[in-house]
Amino acid sequence: MKVAIAKPFMGYEEAQAAYNVVKSGWVTQGPKVEEFEGEFAKYTGAKYAVAVSNCTTALHLALYDAGVAEGDEVICPSMSFIASANAIKYCNAEPVFAEVGEDYNIDIEDVKSKITSKTKAVLIVHQIGMPADIDAFKALCNEKGITLIEDAACGIGATYNGNKIGSHSKYVCFSLHPRKVISTGEGGMITTNSEEVYKSLKLLRQHGMSINDRVRHNAKTVVIESYDVLGFNYRMTDIQAAIGLVQLNKLDEILKLRNNIAETYFKEFGDIDSIQLPFPKEGKTTNFQSFSILIKESSKKDRNTIMQELLDCGIASRRGIMLAHLESPYAYKNVTLPVSEALADNSILIPLYAQMPQEEIQYVIENFKRILEA
Ligand SMILES: *Cc1c(COP(=O)(O)O)cnc(C)c1O
Image (cartoon, rainbow, N blue to C red):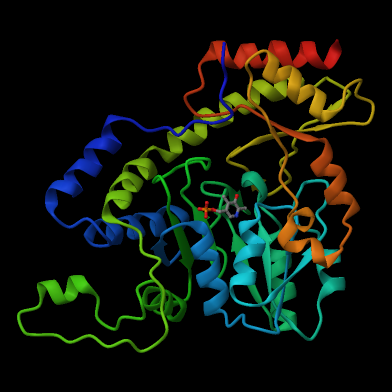
């Protein structure tokens, strides 16, 4: 048997939706993107949503719109996909890496100790769908007069204090990459509760163009657009948005399926002393974008051995969340982050995807237990 780490949950409906757009003759950002944005805002409970090409460009736009520029510092966890730090670099600003706690989320005490007069923003990451403490960071950022940006690349459908991720702050960035819970192939979304930010982001993602192509296409009199600010081409296509609309409709079902598999893992692995399972904290629910297991020191085997033995029986696994500060673009910073490093060295992601068949789930459980105990 071969078990993949993840698979997108897509089928005929998505293909049909994409085909309909192709047939319509309007394939780039247009009516489907607008509809998708409306549904995405409704789902998350945010006032507005702006679709972009991926979450990396979403993060770049959010930071740029917040005024992050050369000479500024932005505090973020090193423990994240490298795009979080890279987006800060795109603004010619400097990422300042903070520690995480044992729940993999950014540690507010460490963030406080790293705020300087140069700090312009704090970028928190909802790790593998587990929400960070948004309210605490909101309060801190308000007090210090700095901007809070949420990297919710993996966070769609997760909740914090009873509300969906996306509804809480000024800049929340989502990814629609196939490794996330719903996908448009590539894609991103920024939700905001600020009308001003909404208008600005719409301008910035489309070359700073004052009147968009669709308005000009439908106009009865000649319209000449102007370019009032330096913008970017970070558009999503209508083909992607049509797929996204179908995916959004399936999201609640996907969350239920993922949650069921996670519950089975909790039940089967809960009593094993040599590992620690993720623990959803009070007031938070996760979408189980990934299922992360920490291999404790008491384990007979180390993480890499376990990964190899899983692979030997056809089961894909991944190391836990990466650390940006150990990669070449950030090695010059020479930082050490003991908590993040210990978590990264000893955590493992095991297969979990919505349509995962029972036989695969059981195969993972049997083999993971056997490998840990042998
Ligand atoms: C996947 C991911 C990104 C990048 O998303 P893309 O849509 O691939 O650009 C950024 N941050 C985190 C935390 C991610 O997991």
